[in-house]
Amino acid sequence: MQSPLYADLVLLLEITIAVALLAGAWLARKRKFREHAWCQSVAVLLNLVIVAVVMVPTFREQVSPKIPAKLGRSYVGLPAAHGTLGGIVELTALYILVAAGTKLLPERLRIRRYKLWMRTVLVAWWLVVLLGAATYVRWYVPLPFRR
Amino acid sequence: MVRTCLCITVLTFLLFNAVALLAAGSGYFGSTTQQGQEQTEEVKIDNFSFLPTTLTVAAGTTVTWINRDDIPHTVVSSDDPRVFKSKALDTDDKFSFTFTKAGTYSYFCSVHPKMTGKVVVQ
Image (cartoon, rainbow over all chains, first blue to last red; front, side):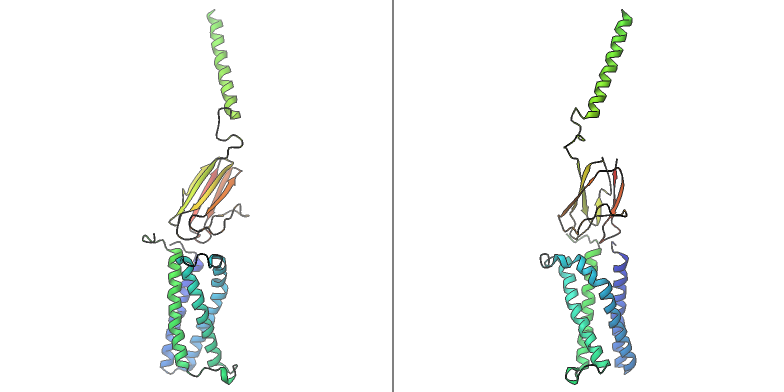
């Protein structure tokens, strides 16, 4: 394995956060809505910190300069897809947090079909985690069948 | 007579060696270190490794790293302050640095910090 320590830690944290979101969804099914709200809020906000502190600077340094010229290469395409979908999902999750957990938004901007939004974001979140794991493998794991 | 011949032989031998040493020192016989003819060496980057891991060169040698891997790598000096630092090298990209001073120069890939190498300049 050729990964730096920060990449290992981020992967581990992201898997933990994704599992926590599943646990949070289970809490909602058990009608423990207060615990559900806390669990999902902590997960989404912790992810926001990781994205801002680690992912964005790394992306800007190692991936952005190769876009669009090398977008067809998997080591650029995978993190680009991960970053784009991840950004959309994180922003949507934050929107749900604000819409569901506060009264900051005006009535017309509130979400009505919470379950649909939350479940869609949860599925998309796991897709982003898988793209992130694929990016990790592409960048840091020597594979014999790569060539 | 014999002593004179012996003296001439010894003197000729000494003179020959002195000339040979001077010629070698001045690069008269086409040494590769003569001025204007730069020496070059190559380090291949492949499969998350620098090959050779340790390269020994003479002072004044230009070392070129070529990325033959299918993932970006960098070549960054471990010294503080950094002696050399490449940008991220894509496949088939090159980076060169001329080592003018003797010493041991350790370096690594900043993307994959466990990838390390060394250039020994004599």
